[in-house]
Image 1 (cartoon, helix red, strand yellow):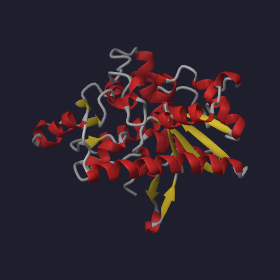
Image 2 (cartoon, rainbow, N blue to C red; image 1 turned 60 degrees about the vertical axis):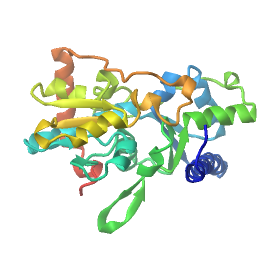
Image 3 (cartoon, helix red, strand yellow; image 1 turned 180 degrees about the vertical axis):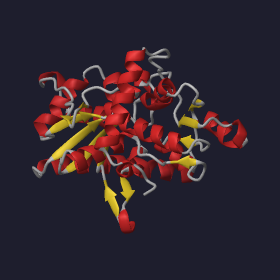
Image 4 (cartoon, rainbow, N blue to C red; image 1 turned 90 degrees about the horizontal axis):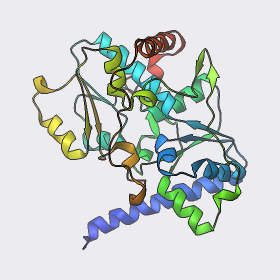
Length: 305
């Protein structure tokens, strides 16, 4: 397949940036400064030896690992509140940075941080974790959301290093590192203020933010799209034909099929784990949302400040 000069330069630039992320991350670990890793669910999904890979990075100096998935509860909570307050307004989930970059000016896209940024903000602001954050990531686009605007137009880097699953695999192979020689490490949940983030009640349980919101708001019109072509059809639709809450993913199969996952490891479909949740699950989710009302400032998790 022939690649145009322009596309080749773009590809080389992206590959160089990926290498810089991995190199910068490894160099920073050598400084002894505190580093926290946030871990995408796709890492466990596609890498069967991933707990031992975490063991490699624990030996290199990463002090703690947090799963991102439970913090999707904060993302879902914020959308739930906005949907209740603005009864006729449509919202577009910001969980996929590929969608944000391809469709930047349509609807209320980007109102709420992605689960990754909600995790980083919560851990930094509410749990006092200091130092730099790295993301073990299924997407080479994620670095474009790491810096967020703050008061007085200042910017803040919530996450510093985007280490894709492909980066991890390539680095282990190039260095000849046998992950099996390292003790397995589990990601750490953090319990505080009455919430244990070891597991989640939204995306971790239902598979998508839309499914979680539908469970507690049965009349809410939601839609999930996989791939830019399907997303584009939504954006071209007349406003009356759009659901109130739209959750598009740039990659078919969602994040487990992201651009930072080697092709042979990718999943094929976006899993929706539970369509008919029990009343107990719905009650627990609403109770968690009510707890967030008391414990969190919604403005800390939104771009619209």
